[in-house]
Image (cartoon, rainbow, N blue to C red; front, side, top):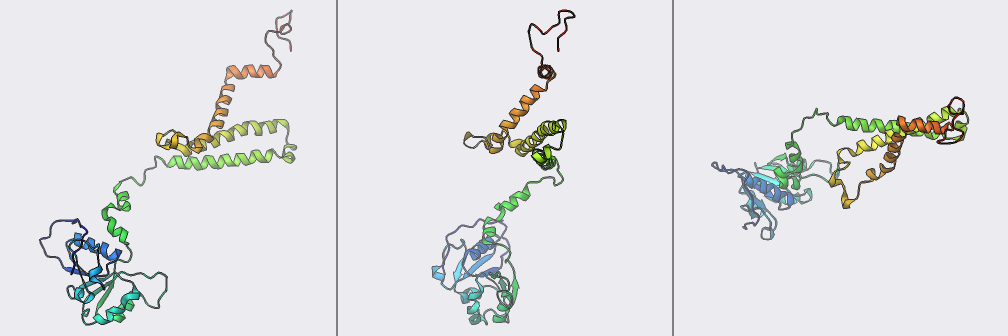
Length: 294
C-alpha cells in the first residue's frame, strides 16, 4: 500500500456521515481525475493497479492496492481501463460477484465490436451488476471542475432577447449586399457593348450618381464592420491600424472632398465655370446693360 502526493481541496467540509468506499481500477488520467473528485466529495477512494508500487501522482488520501485487494474493500468498482485489458477480470469472478461494476470506456470506432463494452463486461463477469456511466466526460472536464470555461460562460447572465446590437449585424449584411449589387451594375454598364446602347445622360447618371452611392454603401459596410473597435486602442497592434481602417482612408477622403464640392456656395461657382464663366476679364460685361456676355 502506498500514499500519494497530490493535494485535493474538498468541495465541502461537512463529513459528519462516513461515506462509502469507492474502488477505481486503473491509475491513468481519467482514473486519477475521477478519484480526485470522489475524494473532494468526501468518499474514501482506493485504486486497483497491476503495479501498485509503481503507481504515482495519485490524489492525496487515496490508497493503491492490487486488483484483488482493492476489489475486496468496496462494493462499487469503477473500471477506467480499456476493453483490451478486461481479461484479468475473469480471475476475479468470485471477488466481483454481486458487486457493481461501472464501465466508463468508449471504443475508438463505431461498431468496432459486435457487442458494446458493457455487454462484453457482463459476459466476463456474469454475476456482477454492470452499469454504464462517466463515458461522456473527459479527464480535463473532471480536473477543471467549476473553473471550466463553459461554466464561466453560463455565469454571465445576459438577456437572450437583447437586440441592442442586432441591428448592426443586419445593417452590415444589408449594406454589403446592396453595395455589391450596385458595384456589379456599374461594371456591366462600363462594358462597351452596354455603354453604346445608352445615351450620355443615362451613362452619366449610372457612372456618377450610382457610383457615389455605391461608394457610400460600401464605406458604411466597412464602418459597421469595425463598430466599436474602429478606434479602440487595443486594436492597434504594434501601433498600426487594422486593415479595414487602412481600406477606409481613400474612400473616406473621396467622400469628404465630394461633400465639400456639392456645397451650394462651391457647386454654384463650379457650375458657372463649366458654362464658360471667367473672372475679371475685359469682355465679361456688356457696355450697354452691364450684363455678362455669353
